Image 1 (cartoon, rainbow, N blue to C red):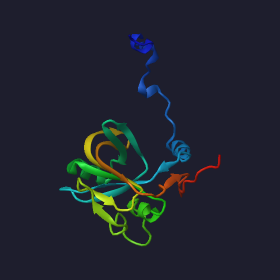
Image 2: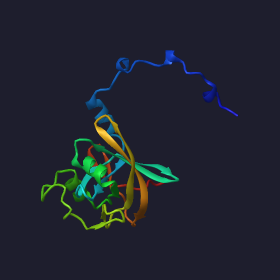
Image 3: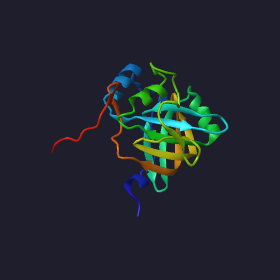
Image 4: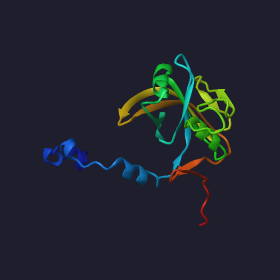
Length: 185
């Protein structure tokens, strides 16, 4: 049995030239995205290309079977080349007490060096990627695939192991860190 979508022929009249499509301004897009609440993660990697980490808010699950996740990293970051060369990465979902870790790996630590693994207690995940010991959740991954989209590289990771602790995740919205609270029903 087929669905109407499968039976529908491709209609070239509904396709448009990409150069003719309107594109929103970067400033308005960023302002609108500020209304989205996201988690705050540190994407880390270690191996022949070195040890790196960067704060990332673009992270999502892709599939439960097999377990796959994705993270988007700006292609200008040295983390991109390191993940490709190392073939592994770990997503460290920050707890709400980790604002200083988020700032450090975003390159803006006013009290120390940016991207400093001396901030926090780090161990090695099974893949060798740095794992933050008290992260709210961790996803240790082998690089499955990647794709460029705009200014970023989308990494798809096959999850080798996942873990969590009893901590609320750090949230980010309207250019500020937030705490998650249950709403009274």
